[in-house]
Length: 491
Ligand code: GLU
Ligand code: ZN
Image (cartoon, rainbow, N blue to C red; front, side, top):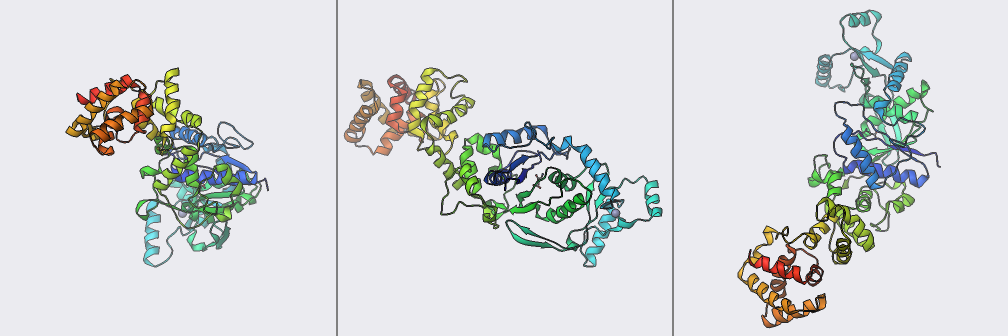
């Protein structure tokens, strides 16, 4: 079955969000599972809301995630162009054909008239959608409207029957005809709407399966009717795609995760240093599972196993903690060299390392990877932990929250004693460092390890949360370690 054609067709408005990525992932996985084609289409016909910035972010995000598309922007394909803003001629032409064939009609009703009739219908307990008033205007009525300079919208004529389809995720679904009234395809100013352009492109691009969020469920019966009309007028090959509606993603307080929730923004994950593998692995679990409690897998493994029919229709809960934990698993699974590669751009953007690090800096970085690999959940945490190793002593700062550890009395006495024994140490390695510090602070001074080493840790690394202390001191070197202790003592 390799004639499967699926599409990911976001509108470029604002920041890409995780719900969108989940949709892209499921479509990608289905295409790869079936050996089909993953089409990437940009639905940018709403000039008031779409932006070029957002368009670029979308492409950049999909590339970062590794969800490669087979047809779409920048690579083209047999149904190019894949940006709807470049396809307006096509929509104009199809709209004219729908009008000429009687599948659509001009509707002259003004907003106020529609509103009045809606209220009246509600008052009389009738279903409030469009009442079909302009379906059969007489020539005389048409003439009258034309003379008033009212610009009509183009409305689709629904066939008036109930709609039933087998949803790939939700099973059989039925919408009664009265709940799916005639709807607008083209605005009075001539702008084509999503209701028209989305199914037209599905038809022309020979899409076979539509996997999308449940929020779009109510547009499905309208679209199914439109695919039939398009078939009738010879637009596309007459395929009505199969539909699978992916479950809602719920955020805090059992409310739908919204674009406004900070954890829904894709750039948040990228900025904090989630690995694409980790984020996608987690998003795959929102509505799907590999089975057998297997929660750690790559998207290639997902693609091999992916069956739409195993998508769970129940709302999925978004859990940032779990997402972070899975990311941490992914970080641990990388080879140290690979982790270093992933970390490097984060270290340079946060100016911990220069754009072109020196050989010594890279060497130090390579040695430090083993100290953090088991301790970080995101690359951003890695940057925070390693900053102390690379900043100059002038730039080095102690985290204000952790400062009391080195300024209170017990902290100071620890630092003085540690500085004295470390000064005497010739063999600067982790084992020796640990031995002299333990002898002095724990045995001689009878301190608790937490108090003894806490102050040193803050003095040397600037934070309570750091890589292991003795290893950190070793990498920092004797001169710099002692300088940090001296600086802490004079702060
Ligand atoms: N452009 C639509 C959206 O972003 C696509 C919906 C669909 O997949 O049909 O909501
Ligand atoms: Zn009307």
